Length: 92
Image 1 (cartoon, one colour):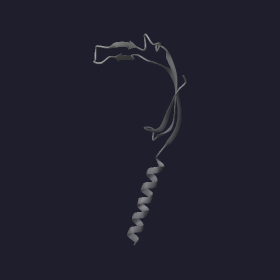
Image 2: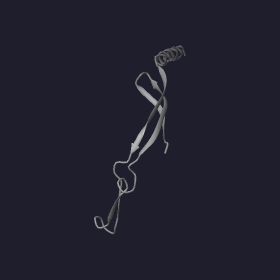
Image 3: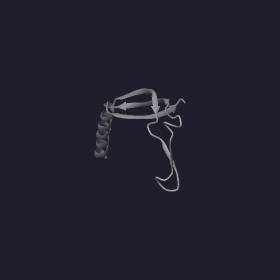
Image 4: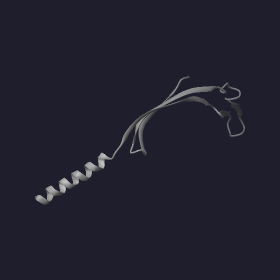
């Protein structure tokens, strides 16, 4: 019985000292910018190469810049591990 109590106390001290060294630093990040479509085509026809091609970027007016925002909230653990939840949002 004394041996089990001694091992439990030793385990409690070891685990307690392990968790005392953990640092926890919260962070909030934001990114803002624009997104552009680089290539977007559509081919209509029965077989590949026999139909008509339509370029949405050049002929369809998709040569615009679309704004976006991204937010991330989380924490850095022990200066090297990052845990968080990113969320993205387009504002167009």
